[in-house]
View (cartoon, one colour):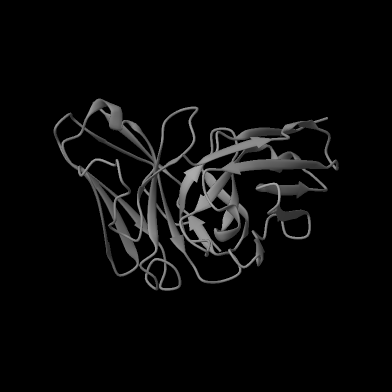
Length: 111
Length: 119
């Protein structure tokens, strides 16, 4: 199975909004509302930011939101802040013997 | 407070073996799915192995037949036995807890343990 497809990089200025896409197939992203997003700062462990497409764990800013349309999921960060600069990974449930797939990751640069 | 503490990483020669451990605390370990996720230097995340809440195990194709995941509920510890290691297995290995009994997404992660396969 191939990894989910994400853009390698996105950038935005403080205060702006950006969206990161995550494209899978009808067997993963398109089949289940079990898409999650992770933020990873250099040298740190990943942190869950969004689960079940659009739910935020306790403590995650409401500037982070998720959505899905067909085989593509999206993470939107509004009101960009310097501390949002990080790598972001999407992850989707597949329901098969390889239960989850990760995207290749997107590096967010806050200009 | 949920804590996941990995150990067992290190330098190993190609063809060698290593066993990683992940000591869990702050939640009912036996009730949740757990996984190992790795990250090669400068690369993205790759799910490696997982064990469901009912103890069904799963492995990525890249490690099938070489890696074995298990857990000891009496010790609240997750293991990853890695055999026939190759240079492509060099990575930071993270222990990750699922939010439920299936392997779908990961709400807590350990700090990672580095495995280096080199001669």
